[in-house]
Structures are given as C-alpha cells and as structure tokens.
Length: 512
Image (cartoon, rainbow, N blue to C red; front, side):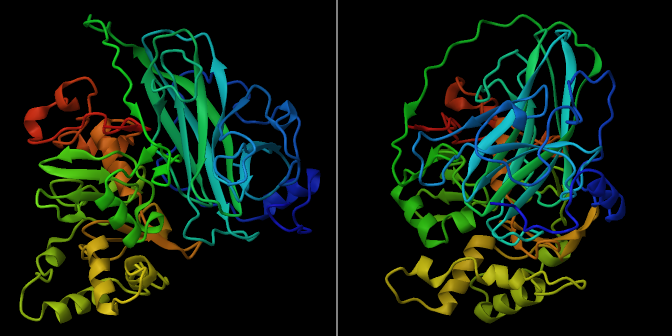
C-alpha cells in the first residue's frame, strides 16, 4: 500500500530537498502562530532527530524506529482480531525527504495513519523541570490528509479527521484521563494548522499529547505533525484558595453496547423516538455521532450530535434546536474560522409557515439564497441542502414524495440567514449560514458539508475543548460552563436554566 502512486518528482534525500524549494508553499490558515515566552522544553520538537522512512508507507508494527526520538506512541483500539475497521492501531512513520505534504519546517515530521479504518491515537512526551503554579502552553502544527483514493486532495464528504493537542496539568500519564486539558478539535484537511492549549500546572512534570481521531473508514486517514513547543507563558499564579475536599462521585451505569451505541464517542441513542428520527433523517451522514446522552434543557428532552441537537417537546413532538439562534450560539468565529453573521435584512424576510403561498415562497427563497455557484466557486449549496434527507432514509418501505423531502430538508437546516461569504483568513473556504447549521465549501476538495456545531455547543456547556475565540464570545451566555457534575441537576448556575437537568449528560458510556 502507498498513499500516492509513485511519482518521479517524489524522490528522497537531496533531490527531494531541491523539489521542496521549487514547489509552491502551502497556504496557512487558522489562528495566528503563537510565540514562545519561555524556552521550549520539548525534546526534538522539530522531529528532525531519529531515523526516517522516506516514502509514504511503512510495514505494520510499532518499532521505535518509526517514531521520532523523544516521542512515544499511544492509541485506543478494539480487541483483536479486529475485522470491522473500527479503532485500528495506526502505523507510525518518521517522515523525511518526502515533499507531500511540504514540511512545516526543516526536513522531518511525524506521521500516523490507518487504511480503511478509524483510529483514536497520537504520541506523547514527558516534560520535566516545571514550576508548579506556572502557566504553560503546548502547541504543535498539524496537517490532516484524508482520501477515498490515492489522489492529492480530499475527495469525499466523509473525510473527517479530528486533531487535538493537550496535556495533563496534574502530572498524569494516561491518555484517557479526564484531567487532560485538550485544545479544540480541528478537522481541516490539506493545510497546516497550529493547535495550542495552555493551563496552570501543579506538578514538576507533565505529559503532553497529540491526538488524531479518524471518524470514517475512508481509504486514507493520515495526520502529520511538526514544530512542537512547550513553554511557560507567565509568572507563577497566585495561591489557590483552600476549598472543601473533592467528593468522589460514583460512576454512572454502563451503556449497552448494541447497534445504537457508538464507540467512536462513547454515547448511545437510547430513546426510541430519537433513534427512529436519526435513521429517517440521514443518520451519521447528516447528524454525525452522538456526543451526549439525553438530558433535559429548558423543559425539553435533548440529545446532542456532532452537527445537530434533537429535541422532544412535552407533547412528544420531535424537532431540532436552532443552535445558531441569537439566544443560543449567534457567534461567527470558532476555532480560528470566521463565518458570516446572521443578517437582519435576510432574517426579516424569512417566509413564515402558514402564511399565504408559503409552499411556493419558501422554495424560491432557498433557491435564491443557497446558490450552486458563487463568486466563481462551485459551492453546491442548493444540492447539499436538497441531498440532506434521501428517499431511502425517510421512506425505507417506499412511498413519499419530493415535496415531503424538501420539507424534511428544511427541518434539518432551517432557512438561510446570511449571504455566502469567504473565510477572511482562507479564500479557499466559503460558508453559508442557516438557522440550524453552517455549510462549508472547500475549494481544494470540492466538498460541501455541515460544520460540527453540535460539538461547539457541547464545548460551551461543559467548558471542555472550548476554543479560545469561542470562549471569549460565549462567556456571558446562560449556557457557559453550566455542566458541573455533582451539583444539583449538574448545573453550575441553575437560576439561568429553568427546568434543566444535566445529570451525567456528558459522561461517555453511561445511561440513566
């Protein structure tokens, strides 16, 4: 197996170095690079030191020769033998002399990948000589490469590879520890993105982690890593006030691991109504994986998915929470990406259900506001909208009509609330905002898909993996860091969320 077919330009050693000087540089997007405030405490942060493989494939196995010096691999995997392609142990390769992708810096980087399989894996390093009470920052540049073929750009809607960095400020060395502070998860393909996280440490040594999560079994799920830094960012923090001893909370009950359980996130769709709705509205393709269990939010039962939030009102009616409404997530900057804001001039003219001629008006409104091409880009916004719920999903036993599917697609997306817009930091990305989601078009891949806004709403509720730009915008929200396990209804500020119960809502692998 090779990631790309042999190309005479992709040679090794000196020839590759010359080629690197000739190819066009890759465009960097995302947050501005951070600079070190103190000395870099990472060993071999440039991944130059150690043996290397000069091609894109190495034999299966986990010999230390496949890892850059100073780093150790880690992975979560299902028991062997594994024939399903779920959570495979990845292959690790120390890269040098290969021009694709171009190195972020120098002529060395670390790669890990799986083939037609998912993975949850990364590598780590123990950092010593720290000053407890000091804030430290860990940052690494990451490049995601996912393919359904041996081509050079993403070519599938299911190409989704999440990348994170983190460290455990308590000094632990378990990649699954809840004490790890993780960055937000970046799912961009074909570009270098700098991931960064910081926290106050209370140990003289910590373990830092990179993390790659392949969520779909496409042909290639590969991540590349370069230029790692762990630096102090400020003076010693003031002493922490004394607090009452921590109460050890009992674990919640285990979830049945049946066809409704998704090991990729550890959550199960237990409610029969939500399970039926999930399957008849496109399943994983439209919702993504479940990222919570069912909980009560403002008088309605809710379950979060990566892209959506399903809710059931007291009368038993199923629908979706408009995650992008003004009182939920009106924000337009998340994890370094900038989306169009909801435009009052557009929202004021939204067709209203029940109004005269609504059926015709709403069709024309969406056609006019969700263009197939825009600004010279084949955005396929209208096709993506119309293809959200398919006949075989909604009517597995036959029947149905195109008009009913159109109504289901409105149910999934709501109506457009902005005009299309380019990301100001990356003109290869175009976005269109709807009431219940944001469509993202990538010029490089030609793929249009919904962003994982359910993940961002969960980050606001829990404070976990909350990107700094979203944290700054959401810190006055009534949902901000409300999840507090052990408190009554697991609410930090119950007066802000009436008729809400988050008990164990975000404890993976649990049920009530």
